[in-house]
Length: 190
Image (cartoon, rainbow, N blue to C red; front, side, top):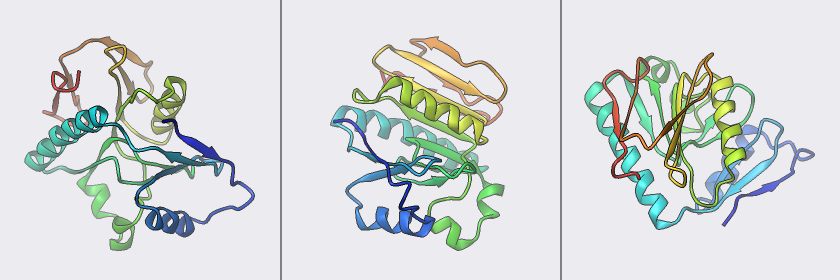
């Protein structure tokens, strides 16, 4: 199944209306581009869902032990500075940024860009589209992000002010200075 994009620019959904649409249709996953296009994402298949769970499990375990920030799964919505609403497969923000949000902001789509993002390419994902999303994260403030492409067994690493680095079949990835001490074991992901 592929994602559907609906041009609803003439409607101009407010942030509250977009949030309510998402709450009223919990079986669907919505994203919204900076230009207002609505993207309806299909559910993932079992294999992708399992691999994504293993990614989030490792990130959550590290975040719980490290205590410097909050990890999020693929159902979390973020309102990026450019106006887009995105839901990365896994993400993390520092505790300082989390604590600076109001209780209401913490309960709804988070009005900031995560510092760290992981996207796991599913078989139905268009590679060019997911790469554009990775660039969008970087342009909106993500310091480190990984695109895991199981089909080609490659990792694309996006960092601020650097060219994209591509790794072939690595067995682990380092959280570098963004997530010190975090090491994603890719063996259960491949």
